Every structure is written in structure tokens, then in C-alpha cells.
Length: 130
Image 1 (tube, rainbow, N blue to C red):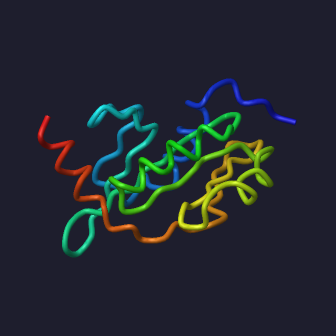
Image 2 (image 1 turned 90 degrees about the vertical axis):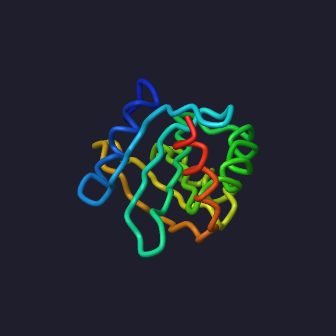
């Protein structure tokens, strides 16, 4: 069983998903008093869509509180977890949050798509205000 050294391994794996389509990607971004593990901004028709990823090597219930704040500022919210946390994700993560599982070969798999939340304009305004 692969043991991930830190969250940066999971973030690097997740970046592979958006390399070709993102117009902006940022890791460990501080915006509006929050640290966001990974932000991906993707071109869209009316405005860019904002995908926020919360990455955890070992998920805990504190993650659920973090997710509840991310939905207020994002168009799409994902949780990124190692493959060993697969069952945890489906037990605790709300169904409007996408789930990305990173396998032992560092390949990311979106196993549940997030729902459109429509709040990404809030984060875009905060990002470009600074």
C-alpha cells in the first residue's frame, strides 16, 4: 500500500486533470482569509468557472466544515483523497461535492462529479481585488 508523504503529491496528481484546459491554476492560495489547496479557473461562456479542490492525505470530519465554506465561493468543489479513503468519501462527503481519488501510481480519478454551485464569481472578485 502506498503511503503519501504529504498533500503536495496529491495536488500534483490532480493538476494533470486540468493541464490542457485551465487558464489559471494555483496551489495553496490565500484568498479572503482562507487557504485553498488548489484553484483551477477554466474558460466558460459567460465567465470563467472556478473549481476549488480541498486535498487531504488523511480525511477527518474537519474537512466537512472546510467544504461548507468552499461552496460559498466556488462553482465546483472537489475533495481529493488517496485511494485508501475511498469508502470514507462516500460515507461523509456531501453529494454536491466532487470526489477525486488518487491511486497508488499517482493517477487521479474523478469518481464523482460535483454539482454546479454558481458562486465562483465571489472567489474571482476576491482574487482580482488583491
